[in-house]
Length: 488
Image (cartoon, rainbow, N blue to C red; front, top):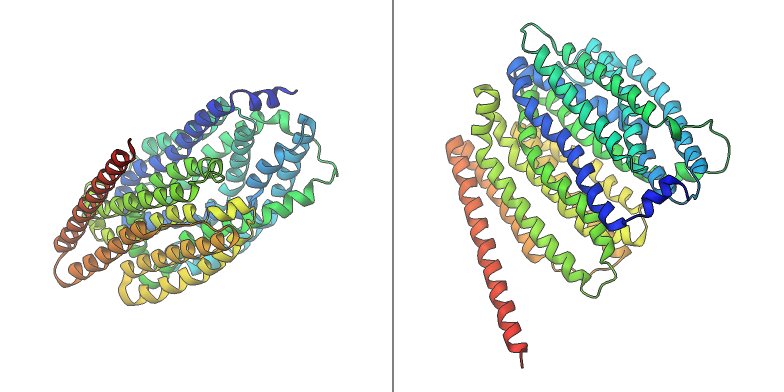
């Protein structure tokens, strides 16, 4: 047995818990530091400059997703089907070769289409900035590939070195460079390029033992076939935030783009909660799916996640304006109108991970493509029509409706693939209540003042918390009564 296989087979449960903490913390640190650097970048560049930078970074990350195209998930699935490290090295090397082959035309297109792409972004971006950002794509792809290989092969210390080192290194350089006035947006892009290149090269050095000369051994076609649905889902998921920002720039201008990006950063707190839940939900849901009370457990988890996430969204919306003023200044106060719908959209996504469990159990991953097909059509249309009518808030509510349609569609398809006796009433009521509070808050803000709007969300949060506490106490009392009646 190879050293890799020995590590894999030793203490699986303990290793699962340790890996969940390690990899979860590394990914959450990336999102958390984005929140930490947000005040620095927003105050330094202002609303228009920060919106431009945010749009560029989303474009670069989406281009990297196009290059990777689900290869990380596919290799992770096939890696453990082989017994010796030589075959695993072939699998890893072939995946890298595919990504490099895709990287060349993608990078060439980004440079060639920089001018028309800049026009699509309205006045927000220009071609030189887009070309600098495009230089980051190769480094991002190689860094992500190295991190994936280290995670697949359980090299935890090296994984943490790459993940946390690149994040903290980028943040530290930003603080040092932007402590001096006069730097343009290009400075942030050059810093990102330098840090990512250094850690991408370090990552290739770390995984050098898993790289070999690729040869035709029949694994490439199955690898690409499995990667296809994962790649489409990842590209669509990454395209939506890029598309909504481009839509804001086109409809409302670069100043509004900065406001939208700032509000999205506050809503990102909900994403931290969602990511922590997703890391634990996958193995948990599969471990219990054959149990007799699996449906009851799934329904309880759905009710809990729906209620807690709806409450977090309302609290975030209540605190959004003072937080934005404190972190970024008065010019970003208007960003608070997008926080609640964007946070609720993330909450719907978290709930959708629960109800789509049937897709995973049935191993029919292609069904996710149908749900995302509905999403990629529905979300932009809603954001476009509502954005034209209601501005920033309209775009955010359109995105929220798109996320709700994705969760509903994926849940319905999952139930067709693997029926589960769901009890979704309490969770759906929590979401419906939060949406109603959001609509009432927007009306109060338009008719009266932002203070009235935040008063509505605060009252809604208190009401939802009170209702949840009452329901929990009632259920606890029912359980105690049942136990007492069951005693002889």
